[in-house]
Image 1 (tube, helix red, strand yellow):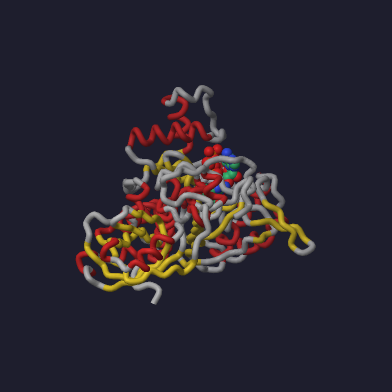
Image 2 (cartoon, helix red, strand yellow; image 1 turned 90 degrees about the vertical axis):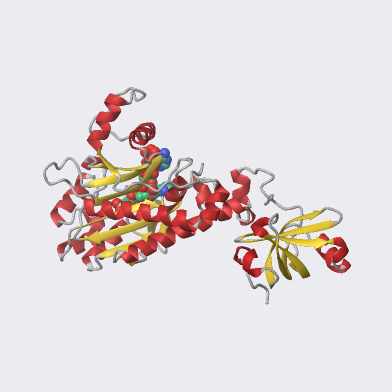
Length: 442
Ligand code: ATP
Ligand code: AMO
């Protein structure tokens, strides 16, 4: 048996005296003369293997001391409660087996004693992920995705998977990755948008997808990836208000679950989560403009209806909301129709604004969504008004002629959700193997 327990599964109060087998990596060896410690690490934490020279078989002690750091070992021994050791116990070994030796020197330090640049860490990501801070981020991200799935299942959503190789753009044409598809040109999909809407015509009613989206952003920023993970939902017989209610509840559920179930990982990262308050505050786009123009003097040029809320204004407004409400999450609703994609529903009373929203974190946009234009003629007009060709959307438009219910949905960037939750400096920290302008490997 190569393992009976993960390191964190041993409870010193109830397992004292028990025989166990632990397997993992040699984190560290400390030879203090009379006593020698091997620290064994697995995904769940670290265990101290203690050998008192006088009481330990000479051959075993010799094997222990010869291990190179980051080798894979298996240790059989007895649990001894020890308040001074990590997790409150140590292991008195009877055998230590070297399973696979690590070469040295290591490409990177794993103990946290030497700081490495993000680039070096990403170049050596397999070993960077052994650092407990990196492991903690992905244990939390795992919980985030699990909670979202559970929440959406509970709310009658079904999980779907849609094509990533497509013939047309959804979010505007400039940031597409072209690929060669036999003798034709194709693209990597920017968003499941068109497919999730088509599934509303199929009567699936409530769908979600957690999957990759591809954006050929030329820029190199802390919050943009070229391959990101989008959490998309679409729901029928619903408007933008219904969609926002699902979104804010989903975010709160994620914060609650991570706070409750990932306390050790949060502690490793030094993060205390504040659960956002429901309902999230809503500002219309025009409210935001008024506030920026009248209450935020740092923005010198007056903003006008139709202007994009740029990065600086977005940040200052985020601070404004935080100072007013103490909350980091809020909505900006009712965006000008011309700033939103063709699929957003124009408002019935004021067609120059759309039934759309962005869900913001104090520091950046986390999600966009909308009620959709579900009437064929309205949709065709919108496509034309964006200067796009109706013919190239034939596959998407057909469902709108044969019984399309009213519907709406949103997309949340999973990495941005994790990044903002854990206050990470760079979105790349929240991706196992990030893809950016410069990085295509590993
Ligand atoms: P900003 O901070 O400028 O308001 P944002 O992060 O709110 O940007 P996104 O949420 O990324 O904007 O908006 C969606 C799309 O807009 C992105 O996928 C990208 O195509 C484009 N985009 C906006 N700003 C940038 C940027 N600085 N670099 C690259 N792409 C950008
Ligand atoms: P949007 O383009 O705003 O909307 O994307 C939705 C969310 O996805 C995340 N995101 C990104 N994260 C990291 N790097 C990127 N390059 C990147 N691009 C997007 C952001 C963003 O808020 N079809 C609509 C959604 C809908 O209406 O349902 C859409 O794609 O967190």
